[in-house]
Length: 267
Length: 263
Image (tube, rainbow over all chains, first blue to last red; front, side, top):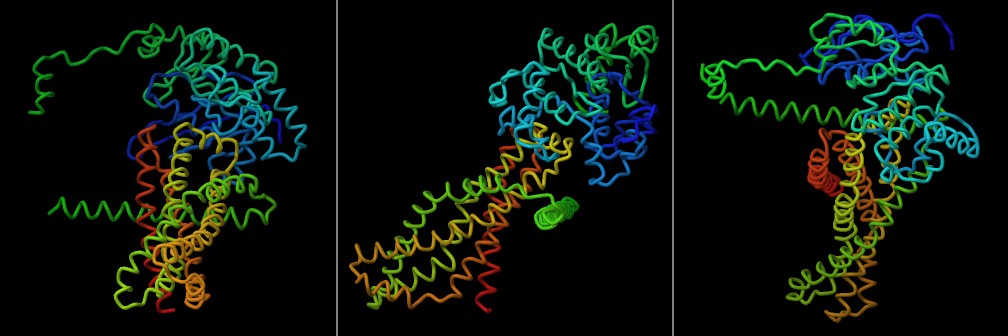
């Protein structure tokens, strides 16, 4: 695989639509090798859609996504499989296979994609689980784990094939601050130990300062700000300010007559 | 008027869309089942065997019980008419041919739909809701190869196997009732049954059961992949998979009954 100095992910003029509705409007950005790239935004800003496009679960309406300089969007499903082995993804709800033990979950990519001996796979599974702090949990079923442990197990599974890029979908969603901080530390550790490129989708301001090298802020399908976390704090864009200062949306339409009309549906 | 025409249009479009999706699924399944092993991408045999045990072996007790009872009921109902002509020995013909050509394959298919067709829809639906299907794709594992093919193969083996057993149990049910309750001569009954059945009856039953298996599996899988929006969606599609599947099984049954009548 060609090791280039260019960006590991390069997105150009990406447009994504659900039917008629445009969700992502002409996004262009690049993720540098080895950095932690955080996609930040409110609910419904299109950040999950962007992630689904990046990992290839959705095909974009137009525009290109290049991974390691290869256009991912134009590939056939067969060719994608090769690229996918170099990516890992941590899902919001961990997406562990509930019918398999934690160990089998982590071993699955190895069993399916490699011709390694079963004993080697077992050792590798143990290593990956140790790595995320779940040593000795191989024989547990996913239902027996807590939310934070499930996410850790999901990360171990994503790491199984030693990927170059890891995508995280809302890693701290639904976790208490302590567990969430633990997960942030883990993301950081993975990135520094293995020189991984991480792409993290989140709305959690607290995580951003801890893990991000670059932040890309989305609002209504467009990039409103991009840069290091410190730079972002100085940007004057009203949405960025609102997000950073945690102010609620202005309550519009206090006009009583307009409200009455909207209720009765007349006029 | 507009509402009616619009409704008809929507329903036909939806039906067309559904059949298109099922066709894509069929082609995909067959490709992964037949072509992939040739390219050195093996089938998941262990999972297939596990699924076979679940679909086939575990459904045996209930299928056996129901088929035994249906055989007995058929014999009793037949006797109600045939006794008037003193032709009760023809119960053997009716139960034998009826079980082999029609009742045993149909009852087996309907019971396996209720047990396993719904389970397939629920399993795939739950996996979809929990992003597990997405997880498979991101790992570079094709959901059709990984999930559908083992179920399809298992179903394709399980339904005919269970059907063969169901045929014998149903005939035994008729035999049991006729000899114990109706006091027919056991030897005569067996001879009469053996004389009534020809190879074509068995072929008819088995060909039907193969197509029932295909129907059960694909309806379950299709409904499973259609699940949207949480637990409610899983429940809705699971129910709908059973109803659709039984309807489709009856249609398939009709088509093959007509075909074998003239063939």
